[in-house]
Image 1 (cartoon, rainbow, N blue to C red):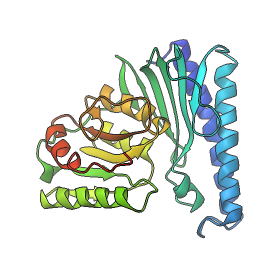
Image 2: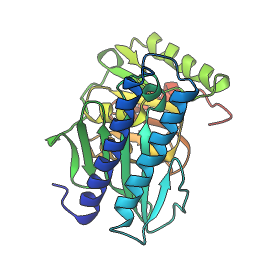
Image 3: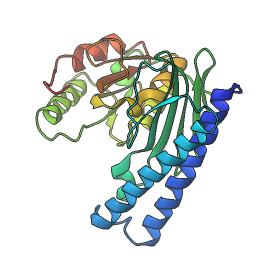
Image 4: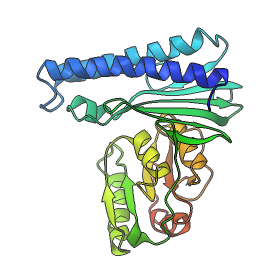
Length: 271
């Protein structure tokens, strides 16, 4: 299925990173921190988990492709115009992790000349592996993934993400949620791990997911997963999604125009 060298290397690197994250999560639980709010000690563990997982992932890729470039959350900000670019989130869902909530992920994507070619997202706590390749489809634990076929809002569950900003952007998000409920959506879920929220769209669990600000490592792999599963991904204003900080709207395709009309009404100045 995904047997080209970049997929093999990306898969092995993501799995190595997931082992690091899982080990730190076990340490969090054994230290009795997992059932508390994130204090100084737990934040230190989170930081260490992020940094070490990223180092392991980058080292695994670099040992095979020494000339490739990296865009990653912790320590790599190389040019996005590189011919060969790996976009890495070593621990997506940091706040869940820090509070002992077993819902976080490792995300790795490979871009060639600015176009996503391969992505993998690992649900670390549950051990689920989601992979996608351009023209090869989206797969969850070796089974083909497909967006749902809902064409009305009252059929579909929608995922939402909140940026850390508690001001204008939070209010914009809440207004969009309010408007969606007024349109009689089936329900809203906020899980706090954008990479896995996008996977839920590709698997047909969500009909849509939106967030007004995400970093490229948050969506690089998940975006390709949704598209290869038959969905549509744009900014929340309908533009092509850049490999940069951006708003994100991912849908099953059928619902995209309807939801876009709602979420595009709010244009936070920081988005």
